[in-house]
Image 1 (tube, rainbow, N blue to C red):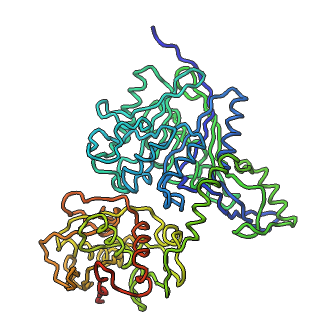
Image 2: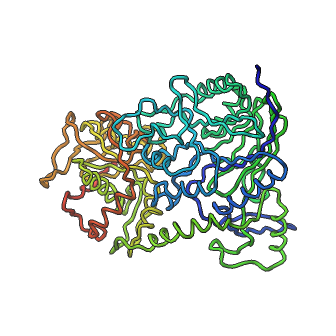
Image 3: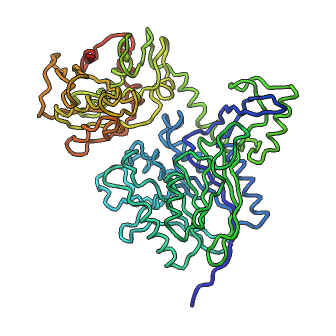
Length: 585
């Protein structure tokens, strides 16, 4: 007997790219009244306000007899100290507290490889949708595997489809699946045994498989990016709604608040509506979507909303309020703005953050781990004052940590852009390192490389940083090394600009690097991918090994072990620091 379908009425809320911004942020907005401009600050967003607004939207849906669902379109990892310090534990707790129905995996969930995702899956109460992530050939000897994790809805290699979830709306099944960037290995650190496969082909196969089971109402949770979502919608038939992320797109017209005007919320392409809700937990999107019995969308309406605290402030620290008439007008205007909601923090979620995580973050912000007797300057490309004083120490810390893990590392290379600031003289805290100096939780790895390719990697990075014979991507690629010494001659032919390459040995000598000999190096997983001029690193033997130690983990442990290194002492118990790199222009 042929199945009879029913129409459904749904209300959906969604967020994306929250990047561990659990606490509210200070946000400045630009308004104009009677020819006068005013730019107050507001307390914006945060998970406790998102929880409050999601609860309000859910209650409105209940009153209007509409099914409610709440989704996250990926990239909850990275961003703040809450990730740098807790590596996904806080993200799981906070997302569980939001009671989302499902989340798509984003590229930043995989910045540190698969292991943090496996741990995340053990903590969450909702499905993680990764429909084009093929884990069918996952290595069996991993300590923390993805295989068998019930919360992970990955790729079905046998059927070439995404695994999907079924939610019920007024008794009618609604199929929901997730897709993420199929070129994940180019921008993240997914383990090589678990690749992402073609998103479009997976979508087409999945839609057909869902239809074959007699289900005609389909929602895609995507971390492909806004333009890619539009392209996928144009190339497929049968998806009613795409809830997306990755490109930090805040759909709608927010120009009256001093922000960019994007395409309208719920852009329709080939019968599919597409929604994105900004970034950093500043906003929430929500929509009403109705399907007829045949699975066609018959009604769509919705919007993104910025979530504000109750007052306008005069300063970014939110200490001084306004009392004048102009700001009273601004307050009234904002309260009537269709894309702004003033809402209180949800007490339950706020208490979770306040009781479990904020004290630990504040403690670490005040935990002294070392003292710099003098300022340590960071500069990307050496200038008249010299090279970076901090970058070689960071590179040395990679070698230190890898040796602690049992790797007999010969040298370390780190790109200048991975270091975000100088270090001032005085006490140094964990927050100074994990939140300011090395804020990206990118893992460190090791690799075997021939001497000739070490030279080519150094040259390629400098060529890129200085745009010498290539169209460079910026000065951030400039290499700083530990245990390497060389001369770069920019006038030489490409491929022969690094000369006199030497390696510092454990015996205390500098010896010439042999072109055909393999050496064990360490760098960030980002650099190991050969980006920004480091192409020669991809000629490593095998795939290398990426650990779970982040850049900040390495440097924090290093300066706790060798505090004298912050005072200009150039000797550890394991190796001497590299000689100054010579650049001959």
